[in-house]
Length: 134
Image (cartoon, rainbow, N blue to C red; front, top):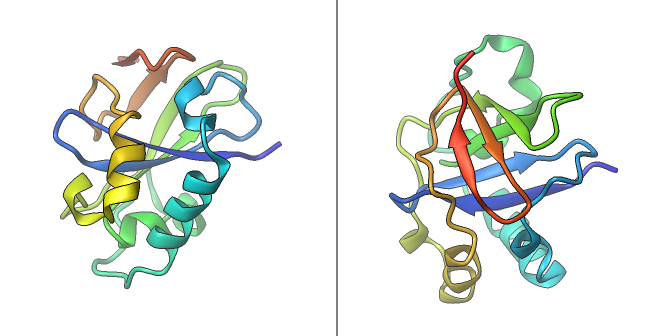
């Protein structure tokens, strides 16, 4: 089942993660379906503020709407549990303080201990995360 979830990094930047059926998702991401949906709606209704920026190439253009609105976009790597690849990186990232207070509180509990922008990340079910090198 396709499942998207959100997190912030130590700098408060926002990322949308496309789980693509991987069930290695931080438990806190599943804590509130209502707040998860509210985060989707908030991001999806923001105006696009920048052009597409796909470091890995243009084949991921269809996944980049969140990036054009200021969020990093990571997609699950097939057959690698908990591993995500960077699809798109905003030039001017959104920060947690741009969101409404209820979403700030929710996403504040989803702070990963790794800076967004790395080409590949591992994210465990306990919320541990690390940048991966190839």
